[in-house]
Length: 373
Image: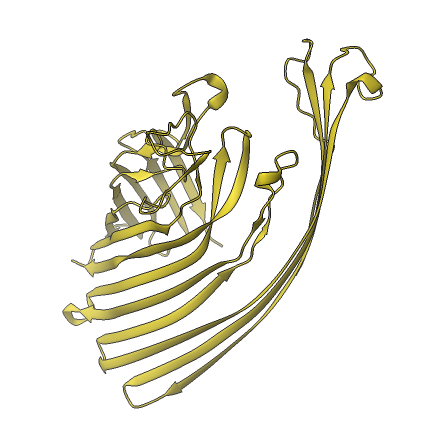
């Protein structure tokens, strides 16, 4: 796979009519090549045991040229760009990244009977590295190393109540080395991706479906998660973090702190109802409740960037053709109108303890029509 990304001549102005207006001209060109090959072998060890052996080999090559030209408008008269008194600093970065990895996987499946399947798996994963683009801040121009993960999983897939219900369970553990973490450097005012030493994500997942009656289906999903930085001694400080709060020379030790968007408990409960009507019509409704405990949004563990626990209700109700050719429904999202932050961070330019948040959409109602042909 070949990829190319080019960004040219971006301008940014601060106080354009003031004595210290600024222009920043950026030219970024990145070329990438990657290829991979995958193979899998399956064989039946016995009447009730299957084994799967698989492997993927991947190579990634990236070449990046990044130039940034700063022009401080000491003389605020046009032409700005050609005025030698306004000449500033120019930075050019030529970076190359090459990486290859082999990712094996082994899965064993045991079928004690026709209603149960137990399995165990071992897998290795890989995420290619890259380069940071921070001209003028040499300390931040370090390369981003490849991220590697070793994942273990034990699980069961079962059919219950003479086929009316299904229950799946999975116990998992993922050990991650060089986890790639994007953080905001408040002093340099730039986003930087760096590698955490290691992280651990482990837990239990369960999903359940049950045809309670001919017209009503119940579904549920539940997750218990423990996801933390195992070793991360070079985390970026959040803005205005003090030494007493753990910030030493713009670095904090985040070992043991939770990963982003990783609540301890989350899940969904849903009800789905379908009932035939006269004249070949069908009445239906569905309600889903998603719930979660609190979780951190920003990777720098800013205590002001947590999302509190919440529950959100979605639903739909409508009628349709009994043969499934058309449907009309009233659809509702976030019916309880809960405020949920998609992103939350500090704003260092606005002063101490200033933060902003991007919110998910509030309550939404829509009339939906579908025609299948």
